[in-house]
Image 1 (cartoon, rainbow, N blue to C red):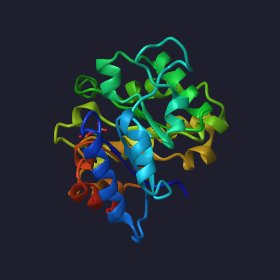
Image 2: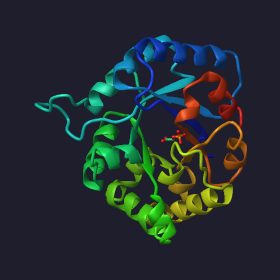
Image 3: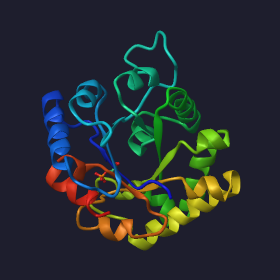
Image 4: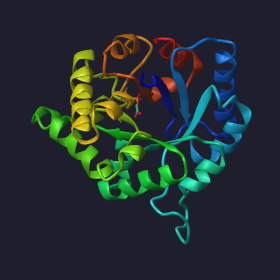
Amino acid sequence: MRKKIVAGNWKMNKNLQEGLALAQELDAALKGKQVNCGVVIGTPFIHLASVANAIDTEKIGVAAQNCADKASGAYTGEVSAEMVASTGAKYVILGHSERRAYYHETAGILKEKVLLALENNLTPIFCIGEVLEEREANRHFDVVKSQVTASLFDLSKEDFSRIVLAYEPVWAIGTGKTATAAQAQEMHAFIRNTLSEKYGEEVVENTSILYGGSCNASNAKELFSNPDVDGGLIGGASLGVDKFMPIIEAF
Ligand code: PGA
């Protein structure tokens, strides 16, 4: 059985004190509660160590939202996968569309980041997804397939089995527009097929594929009820426990 995961992506929100308070509030809300999915929060880099120290990381996995494509050295301002791992974080979100679009992260750069994350025992949450024009031109399947193959398909079967994927149609991110449950299922099934051709049924049956893009308390249940949707990557609705908890409880 593959793992169900609800992961928050705080993006560039919350200063250290606010972030710490949010993490602790979530930790308290989950205490003693039986939930049916893994919970992850993706915080800014500078929050990672404090957050990981302040919460039960067996219950809430901590994720960085990025890491460097180099192991170490003279790369001013960068944060390596090893540094992320040393904070107690267990995950790293890689290839988010905002990183691809605003910081020009190419498939080649992302391939390096994935390798470094795995070397440092971080679980990559690898994001893929098409922009609106690509969907309108009926190119969404090709785009997503090439994002997956270009950055991940040199991985060994063993390494690949440590990846979590997140399908995030760019037109649905932060727009309030969600893919319909049918659109999400269609793409997730397509991704699973694509992966299966390369890595085989068994590995792929165990690969979690999350949906992201305006996922919230009112649509989570319907999205998560699809057989190939294993959870969500949640932006806006992860910034408050009142909005995030119902998504966790949708499982
Ligand atoms: P959103 O963001 O939930 O605010 O649409 C999702 C994401 O970008 O991961």
